[in-house]
Amino acid sequence: ISSFNTSLYERQTFFSVVIGGFFYWTSFNSVNQTMVQRYMSLPNMKKARQAIAIFTIGIMLFVSVCCYAGLLIYAKYWKCDPLTSGMVKQDDQLFPIYVMETVGEWKGVAGLFIAGVFGAALSSLSVVLNSTAAVLLEDILKGCFKRKPTEKAAAIFVKGSILVLGAASMGFLFIVEKLGGVLGVATSLTAIAAGTTFGIFSLGMLNPYANSIGAIFGAIAGGVLSGWVSLGSQVAAASKLVVPHKLPGSIEECPIGNMTGMVERDYPDESDVFPLYRLSFHWINPIGIFTVIIVGSLVSYFTGGRKSDDIDPELISPVIH
Image (cartoon, rainbow, N blue to C red):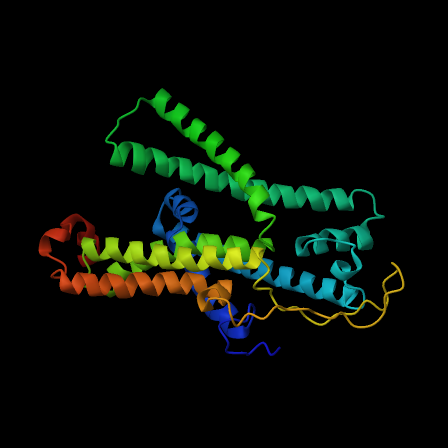
């Protein structure tokens, strides 16, 4: 299948990766709590911009290395599909088996690989848990419920929240493993909050007449629609109604059994599946963003637009000066 296919249903195309990836990474880097918390820890705006530049270069190199690793794996196994031959059961097991078969005989290399994977995962998880606990404390407990806990009580609340969230994360592992590849699942689920949040900020920056009512209704519409598409597509994938198309492969050089010939990909007929559930996961984030902006703009227009009382002079004074 051509990578320049314009179909929105194809999982990986040039347009879905570039356009959807642009909106996803912009949302993640600009308004995500884990990133904003890092920016706020820096002494000034100049340092924050330098951090963003370093992160951008680093993530470009990281994604390039991941793509190169995928090419290496395909080059090694395209004549012996590990999934068809039964060597692995999930796509996520391809990289570990590749490492074991290529450098597994070198002492310590396989262990270093596993340590790196777990280290990266735990590092990301710790940042997310810390940021979420901070939001629960500052925005929910202190903001919504108007509580003013002591320093000791706040520390207990944060640590307890992290324990509960960590246990919930471990519990969701049993659900995620049945939904397919980690990349698609993670991108689909995180796109719900990322797209909605980025849409709210974009609405306020792009529409001078946007008000709080429009932002609320836009956020609800964006979250519901992107959540509907994301969760619906995950259910369809778990039910094997929608199966990602894969590159051609062969089993002619497999050491297991007497299998020969090209791998026959058996894809289900997706014409009866609800169209939104067939969308590539790359489009979920843009759907949420533009839904928030469109609905928020319409509601703001019909509710009279932004009033002068809605604008805090202290927020715009730095911009004016």
